[in-house]
Each structure stands twice: as C-alpha cells, then as structure tokens.
Length: 453
Ligand code: ATP
Image (cartoon, rainbow, N blue to C red):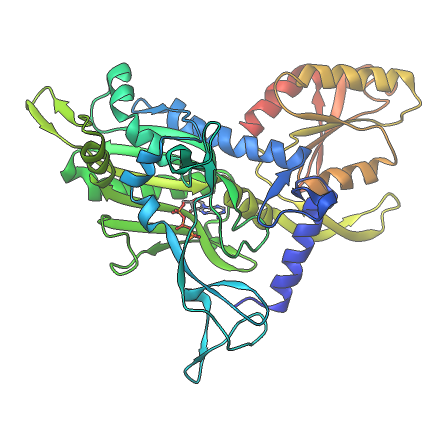
C-alpha cells in the first residue's frame, strides 16, 4: 500500500525532475504523448552513467561477455518465430461509458460485478487481445508484406546473431552477449512517471551455457545483478527478490527472479533474471532452418546452448536511483540559519555532475581565472559544472539539489593572499557531510578520480 506521504514524495520527485532538467514530457508544447518521455541535460548524463557502468561491469571487466548493437527494425519472421506476434498481448477491456482502455487483469470485481476503475461504470466490453508491438512498414507500400514491428525487447537480435558472434569472438561456453538499446511497447496503461513507458531502454545479457549449468547460473546472475544495484548506490534494504511462481513464469523458463525496488508507488520490478532454456535458439533454428548450435571441441558434442537472461530497464533504474537518492534535510544558509535542503544523494559513480567549481567572487579576475584553470584541469576526466553566480551557499544548494557530490571553491587562500602555505590549494566540500577539506590543486584530480570511479 502506498500512503499519502509516498504520493507526496513522488510528486516532489516528478517536479524536481522537470525543474532541474532530468526528465520532461515528450512533445510537451503539444500536450505531450502519453507514455513517452525526454531526458533533459542532467537526465541524459545520469542515464549515460548507468549504461556506461552496466557496460563496464558486464562486458569490459569480463573475459566471457562481448557486445552487440542490433537494429531496432528486424525481419518480421523474427517476431513470428519468437512467439511475439502471436502471444505478446495483454487482454484488454474498453469501458463504454468513459472510453477508458483497461487491462483485463487490473479490473477489480465487486460483488461479482466488474466495474471500470476510472468511472465506476459497469458497461465493459469483453476482454480482447491487444498486441503490445508497434507496427510499422518497411518500404513504399503499406501492406502485409512490408509489415514489421518496432522491437519490444532487444534480446532477439542477440539470438539471431548468435552464430555470427560466436564465429568472430571464438568464445567457449559459458559466454554472454550483451546489448543496450531502445525497446517499444504499446502499453495499455502507461503510468507511474517513466516506470511504465511506451518507449524505453533495456540492458540485456544473454548468457549461454551448457544445459546442466542453467540453474546454477541463474543464482549467480541474480547475485551479480543485486551487486550492480548496490554498487550504483541503491540501498539493499529497498531491493527485493521475488521468485516468480510456476504459474506466473513463461512456459519455457525453468526459473525466474524479479529484482524489485520499493518505489514510492509500491514494490515494482526493476529487472527480470530468467533461465530461458534453449527455447529462443530452438525457435529460430526451426523457423530459419539455420544451425544456431554449438560444437564442443573437447567432448565433440553438438547441442543447442541454454541461456540465462538478466534483463534490466535503464529508465526504471534511473527512476529508482532518483527515488532512492531524494532526501530533505537541514543545512545552514549564508547567515548560518538552518533551512530545509533538498538533496539527491547520488553515488558519485553515477551522479550526473561530479564536481562543481566556484570562484568565491565573480568580480575578482584572479579568482575567476584560477577557477577556469581548475575547470579545464578536471574537464577531460569528468563532468564539471562551473558556477560563479550568487552567494556561495546558494551555489552549494543548487548543486545539492542535482546530486553533485563535490564542490571546489577557489578563494583568496588559493591566490596566496593568506600566506604561501595555502597558495594553490582549494576547499573541497562533500555534499553529504557538508564538511570541507583543504586540498592542493596538484592533488585534486587524482583524489576526485578515486572517489568517482
Ligand atoms: P512488466 O511486468 O512490468 O510489464 P515485464 O515483465 O513485461 O515488465 P520484461 O519483458 O521482463 O518486463 O522486460 C525486462 C525489463 O525491461 C523490465 O524488468 C523493465 O525494467 C523493462 N521494461 C519492460 N517494460 C517496460 C516499460 N513499459 N517501461 C519501462 N521499462 C520497461
């Protein structure tokens, strides 16, 4: 159950996202487009940091995973073989009174009567299948032959390119193919901000293995994925692991976990980790007639590999990060009076801006010149924000609100006006503790690099 306080918290988060340029409604000046969002300057950085970190730990830091960047458009035959064309649908009901389109499984029954959750009306259509894939046409004519879909998941490109990747990478089982990319689902009820969108991004890994390794690797990847969320700063006690029951699981899966997060609107799925057996490769072998199997040089066996799939949503991870980081506490203003501070306690690793550089005064040329020098020094290595406007306390506050973990102030000590010992040193302020330390400019870059790595 979500409380009024949770709803208010969510409202504040949505408003902060717009006010500070994390997330905007798509096509806002035309009234928006339901279920579609644009990321503003800070949201773009945050999202990029999430994807880069995922890529780093999933692909670059491992010997057994390689990458793929498949196209969004694929031959329609892919979606027939994968089962998406026939089964990728949620039964849907229309309310004849208020015209709302509703998911059949989300309509509650009261005294044996189904009522529209929107208007309370009883005049509902029978459930009808609603395919979640967006249709499109390739080429000049709009007919059955040119029909295909915007991909509803990134995974299928990995399955159909399995052989090509295997041949060029010369990997031995177990090994994985990873991909990050857009996916599209014409969701019936987009809701909860970006949580359920119609256009979103996925980070998927297909980890191929021998059949007898599947269940063990399912456990392994569940743990690895939990570590990932902790390493980007999400609190472990707000993460939940749900073992998906036999009834709820896809028929071909031999085990699935949902990794969930306690959003202000309820505990909801962030990622699915599924042991999909050899279902996908076998489907494509049958439909294409091409060999997508594996030859084990040592045992001289030929077989279709099984696969474990951790499939995460970039947008849901970003939303979880923002919800997890959002806090209000007390901080002194310029006159030392305590005031409420809004702070995003992002882990430095994923914070959109790593460090803000401030000259103490903007009308002192020497301070500005030194601050610009520090900005140039740090810039090639991390996202730096330069700000010379307003009282220093207000500048700190603006950075706290967007989660910048470090602030560097260039003051008269830096210029050597308070003695030679402090020349070329700056104050380094920590966002969470608000404590300041004096650091030599020559040591600043190395120090920051170790803290944001
Ligand atoms: P749900 O039950 O919430 O619709 P799902 O089980 O259909 O999700 P999967 O098909 O397992 O989702 O997709 C893997 C991941 O992709 C999800 O865990 C989620 O992070 C992301 N994802 C799926 N659908 C959406 C969506 N409509 N908006 C944003 N992210 C999504």
